[in-house]
Image 1 (tube, rainbow, N blue to C red):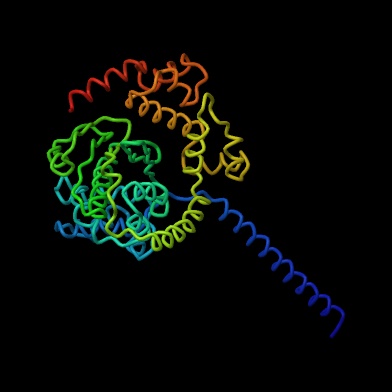
Image 2: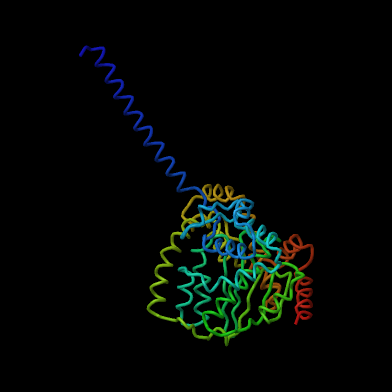
Length: 377
């Protein structure tokens, strides 16, 4: 082999080495980008399949329904996930194509008993309804990162909130109907008792088909609230579960914890909202502190929020507003106390913010709410 050929061979070897190193660098860069990419809001395919199955039972063309909503049929597999945006469109399309204004109630009423998944198992094996509700709130994230069910437990009652990322939107009405009905349906199924909620609230205005609500819940109803809620009495909380099993409950809870850890590591927006709520005590938490709690830099947190078309300031404002309305509707705290609990050091600053949010004062909102609640009873 001549010297020139040897040199060309060496050049090719060197070039190949550079190519391999270049691919390795690109692979590492791509891996970093995948790890830092923000999670997309999604929901377990089993919930989506229930909507599709009920629409089919109503005579809806399923192929046309999926195409119109943008749900990929390949995502409807056991253990699959469906992006939240097409899932929401699926509800709207199914509602319109079925012609049934109570479509959300019917999905909950007809499909809840046939659903088998880890969230259901971990809830139904608890000791009583109080434990089932606490578990549902804790482990909902393994089903969806687009909503949460915060539970407020007191001695004589429990309030199950239904919260969605970004707050309430009119398109969420059918989702709230389904979710509230699902909570009560499963609660009745788990206990074997046809119990009645103390009160049920919704964020949307009273619909024309309100009689469906009354027939299903058989309890006082309030509309135009800060969020959808199911209020449960103490005697219901103490109802034992027919499938209660301490050993199985522990097993399912451990499995749920594993999945929850994975979801928490990915759900940045949910983590930000939780940390904001936890940090609202007389002051607003700083983005740097929240980022540090999530194990990332402020710059990374801002970028990941921007990729979801939200901002830290927007989430802070949204959380304060939602909490303020809930506290005012509860009627148990003074204006000064509410101001402190939503992160304002002075009631005057809270007054200005609330007027910006609603165009009215906290006192006027509380009076209006109390009058409306009294008329609804």
